[in-house]
Amino acid sequence: MEWKFHNPQFVMDSAPELPSKFIVNGFWSGHRNFAYDLVHFLKPRTIVELGTFYGTSLFSFCQAVRDAELPTICYAVDTWKGDPHGGYYGDEVYENVKTVASREFSKTARLLRNDFDDALSFFEDGSIDLLHIDGYHTYEAVSHDYTTWYPKLAEKSIVLFHDIAEHQNDFGVYLLWEKLKEHPHLEFLHSSGLGVLFPKVVPENFQKLIQHKDTIIEQYSNQQN
Image 1: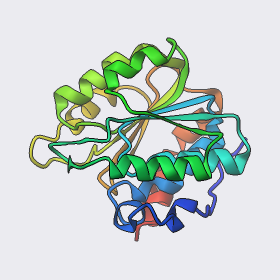
Image 2 (image 1 turned 90 degrees about the vertical axis):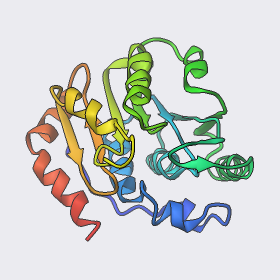
Image 3 (image 1 turned 45 degrees about the vertical axis):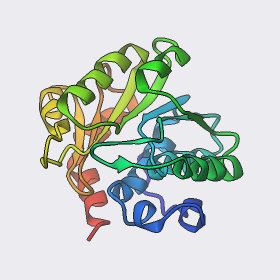
């Protein structure tokens, strides 16, 4: 199976509940097409993301699942209260995300309004095929998230780390990423950076992708120009 570059139409772009400054022009927006294509290629059973906010990444995954008619379930774990990096907010963000998830992706999206540690009990060890870590961005926080969720990863899983290119204030994802790059990986530096890690085993169908990763990286980076 060859990697395919799709031209998706995201329903979240026209959802009145979701502000375009976060969805279309936000920090994660530049990775939407890659996330969509990744889900098509990986065909994961279970996707879990730690940190959702308005759902740019979540709804990218869900769109791919729906379009490809996959049986995948996408779990979004968040308190929807905010943090010192992204700021704090009221219940309106959660309610808006819940509305879109229920209306557009009722078969796919599951919102877990929990702390990351509390949500661990919802998942069996070895059950997660794609884990997206985008919570509090200090080195201590992201290291804790990766370490505590690692046992939940399937043998051929992939982990995404957002903000690997952010060095402002006390952001520390880049510090953990430098340590983890000893594993096979892809690295996007646009849109605050996205690290794509194969922490255990590289699936056979991804080995060719890793060998030609510069082409993949260039393709998605150029979409931002």
